Length: 552
Image (tube, rainbow, N blue to C red; front, side, top):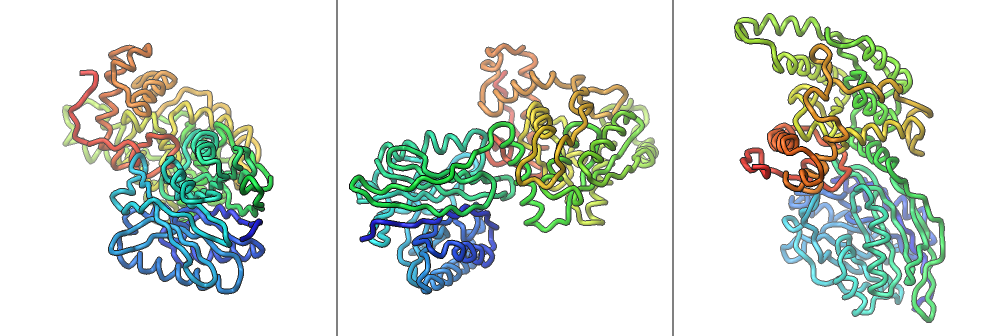
């Protein structure tokens, strides 16, 4: 029986489906902690999380087993053991599990018992639930290894305590959400420590995977609830922790406690990390976007420059006869402040061509929103042509307020491959734009100092698709709209409940109607970074054909 353990917490990014690459990365990090007894990796580190229905392919499970066996063989060198998350097929059933690799073999395997089935998670349709797990004996120490949701709920940890666990190691794939980092530590896992009286290690992955982004924020809590370690957010990091057995149980020696970003810094960083990993993992040379002179496209350009570097960001101004000179000037100034390329391609020739093409079909009809949408679709077509020709991924720039009520043109400004602002309401866009002009994330590749002209932040938002157009012509002012939308979308309140908050019934009824009508647009929108608990697509899943209205 040992009275000391050295455990290396290894907070890593993952690439879904890259079994060989993920395994190689684990071995590289193992070599950096050669004096450790045990190295711990996040949930499903071998296959990448979440792999969704990819795990249902028999060939995928077979390859995962092969790579896990190779990793196990690597531990025959007498170096550190490894706790590695993967998938396992047992008696025809598929499990999310974790394996202890030690002495050249798979020394133990435990399966996830609690399968999350809410929000972004649908593990019950993919995996079988494992039995309540037994502790793993390692060097004479009984380790409890609750896997992600197993640690978020009490039963597994309490069972492990009853079965003799001496410390808890929880491996996670816990996506970022606003305020979630503090909730994990102060509410959820602090409760597990109080309930069991055992010290606990929480290890989470980092990086972006499609719409999800993972913030890391790993930590160690001792049995008295004191924080022994806090790992940084957003970055890969290995922390070697030193544990000692005393008469009262195991205790982790104190170590560095990283500062975790607060609002709105964390939101901005989530957008940067999500976009960076989406573009780089999918091997795009860079991004292209329409720069309108408005705040949404300016912020997207700034995010892209911080994610990829200014030299990989290509802005294109696409003026029409309704585009103001101030918008042209603001767009040019913003690109100069960011340090990225900007080109100008007037769309008037194409607008005139479409007017001529459609004149016979539209005869006797007044100009309306159709002509406005044609302009937007010409811009989308032009930007997609540049994307096709040069390989840059097209960013869309619509915010959540617009996407909620359909204030966006399908096949126009919604055309593209990714949207950093998809889950950010308009007032959030203003807040993080102001924040970025005074701060820069420590890992950002963009320029220091302000990157968005103040004139862009302060001017009234406008699509500039008709003379003197303002967003407020069609929508309530954004401070009011966003509060209504937050109640309707994030809190799932009825019209009556939102009216009780102090809003006019006609306005709330109209916004709810627009929210439901726009579902078909959102279903065809590109992915974007999830920020809150009810993002469109992964969390909030509504039917396109839907006659229900809570306002009658």
